[in-house]
Length: 374
Image 1 (tube, helix red, strand yellow):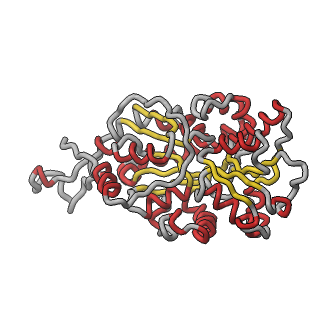
Image 2 (cartoon, rainbow, N blue to C red):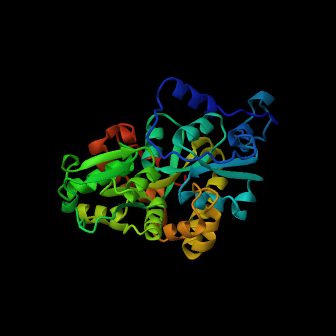
Image 3 (cartoon, rainbow, N blue to C red):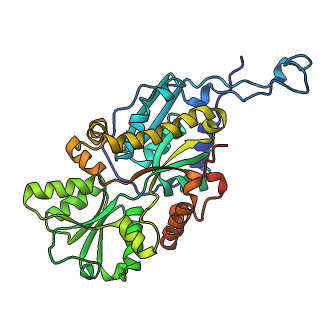
């Protein structure tokens, strides 16, 4: 049987060399230990063939070098996620028999930043990843052969304060608000909601740091009047405040405020799962197992937060299981297939693009971005 080598790593490398993929701000996190090296999924796949061509048996009248190629079983699957609650979803998925019965070797690890994820994709070392939905759109718009499979996390940002005199949006006027990742989704979501609530960026002193824990330390040190933090750092801030006698509390849960100021459901389609198109096209049974498995993983995490926190501890930047467990209760997990979430995603992207069109690659992605199961 003739083997066909995947063209995806070469395609991505060419796109990067041409400057078509650009970096987006992302959390920095300690690098996780690399998993054992395995062949990329695309390197063991062949084109599907049609065994019934004009009523003739394969090879009856065709030269051997013109026969359609069969798809070999997938030998290995590599998955990545950020050092955040979505890591638990993929870590749990990687152990499910529905997936391991199809793929002998399934590996997962948390990526330190988006540059690492891109590099691993270039090398053919990752085929499935959990990423912010805007990142998925940006990669797709810039030519990376990926599609969005689903949305799994629907808003996990909070505005925290330790000032007892700050109780609403107007109280933030003239105050210093620390935000991680300037120009990234925490910054843009906060500004969108603040604007709808009557405050512009000029009404506040917005200060930026390169990672969420830095914003937390500014709050604990009394240098920030308020901070914008994602989970699980927001939960860690509240717990750390109690331990140190600092009255840290949640001022706003931004997804609730998003719903209030937009008049929509209080959901933000923030995190989803992408897969390379070659895997989708050549191994639909694996994609089906991933979709079914992630839905099961969401339900399992919600029913077993303590066990889920134990799974997440190795991946979440040194946070201990009790903090992670608290965070899971504040993280809105819900599995929704990408095509069913499209309307919410497009509304979210449209609002982001009002402040930064390039964050989604310059415009709304077309229908090909959304996996439909076909």
